[in-house]
Length: 438
Image (cartoon, rainbow, N blue to C red; front, side, top):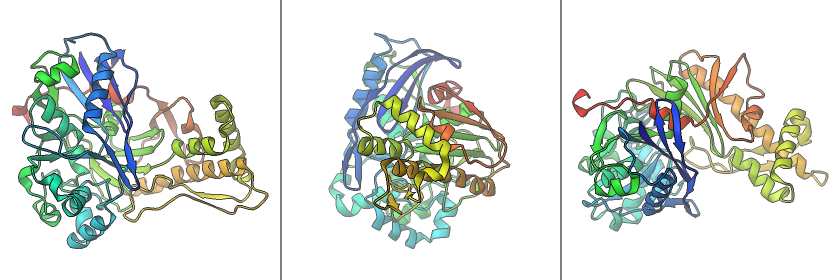
């Protein structure tokens, strides 16, 4: 049995699993992001409290599990001192403060060179080297006592096991890792960002036992001291493992953000895609993200249909989607209400074609049609950079079944397989191994 913990952008879910079977599952334990203009941060202690609450919902414990494993949102960049105390908030993937730093960093390295080494352009916040550069310029005092800098799983290990680690999937989104060849930290990228390599964690595959639970970890996780804790990986990687992680496998997470990932054994970075290691072995994911999918639809409910019960609003959304573009009556929408993960200068959402005859249903239809088109437009790009696409697509989505709408205009023959509890069950498939096997 394992204790699996899924830390998303706004909540934590914990589960006890035996094989693929979920024996116990907690409810969601929520935490808040602090949003201040382009800044999006989470207090590290809020994450720890949410983990403790989620695990507490499983029972009193201590749980006699064989290992603890995590899947985490990424990036969630943080600086720690020598005792493991955070010196900065966790700066999340939604943060966009570092546009100037991203432009300067790409200029120093060269756009093509950065892409070929890191697998990605230095997207503000989404590639955390830009965040590090922002703090060096604007809040250098926060780095004065730095002893370790990493992502969320680095922080959790530092606190719960005392280890200084990160996995390849998280390292891929630091902008400092040789992602395309899995060759460790890049001296060239670190020098360009002004990053001391001594502050970076050790890179271990996600299935490696990176440490054993200490006193604080035992108290929060409700497991025995000494319980093995794996390095952990990104949440999307855990879902891909459940989907099979085969060449050409597509995994689509349809929620507030829509993420479409393709598994490949031959990474071919593209400026309009995110490229990252799976986290285990020589597999990579080519990822296309709609930063505001369901969140755009429910923004429309809050603004235009607040009197409608949620069930009635969902019926309206599905009804409008069946009518197609005609229901928007010439209104168009740019679906960038949360920016764009693959743009340095951030785009914004907007409506065009509005007249005095425009109705609120036209506006909602325009949002739906824009998301449907954006979802389908990703397929040719993924075909160009990866293995031939398998026809079966693993889909993880919410109860509103927005996935049925977003897949409406996909060209070709597709089989959509719904997977539930994808992240937790994916974590359960990871077989722990000792460092000596690495």
